[in-house]
Amino acid sequence: MLAASVASMGEIIHLRIFRLSAAILCAAWLALCSSTSATPYTGRDTWQRPDEVMDAMEVHLGSTVADVGAGYGWFTHKLALRVGATGTVFAVDVQPVMVEDIRSWSVEEHLRQVIPVLGAENDPHLPDGQLDAVLVVNTYHEMQAYDAMLRSFHQALKPGGRLVIIEPEAKPGRPRAEYQKEHVIPPELVKEDAAHNGFRFVGRHADVVTPDQHHWPFLVFEKPRPKAAR
Image (cartoon, rainbow, N blue to C red):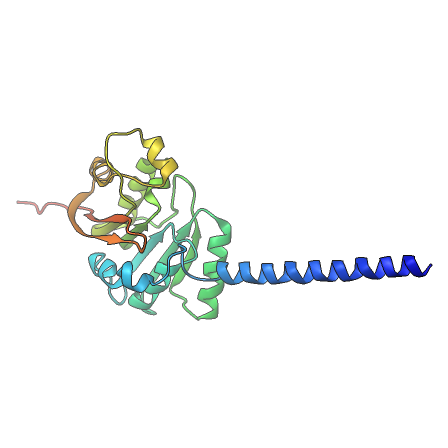
């Protein structure tokens, strides 16, 4: 009887230790997931140059913009502060957990200008003709329905609106499926796609360089304005 009690006590202690370990791991995971950083890299304010990115988007107080592939919303937060209470930031992601995380912190911080949007693989669900700019960072290479997405961006933007795409670089000449597997894309291919879907190439800024020295070309496009009637 005593031996059985000791065995039961041992099982209880083991179970409590297991539960404590699980709770610690869960807390650590939640802390990681609650971060607004969409990548494991640190020091993003330095290497990802958010002010330069937003300047290239021509974002100012009152702008209406979209962060497509927003993740946990690191850039969404930057954009929200830039556009202010009179602006709007559509934070689009295809993963519900990301969208809900953005909804949570934006409500907590009273950033009513942030509108979380659950997008689809072929549709970011953005309003037609209302956006001043669209930002796509480390996401375009994942888009299999890239033409549909670019057409949606074009339709959502006002004439003269900006599209900024910043993606991990690759050399051209290989099948697109290989780039998707490696999470990279050649800038030449992005430019071809954008031109095919009605965008004008504005220019290429200095590459964004990650802490592990990967280059991400920083490309800026524009939805052309209608030509003035003669």
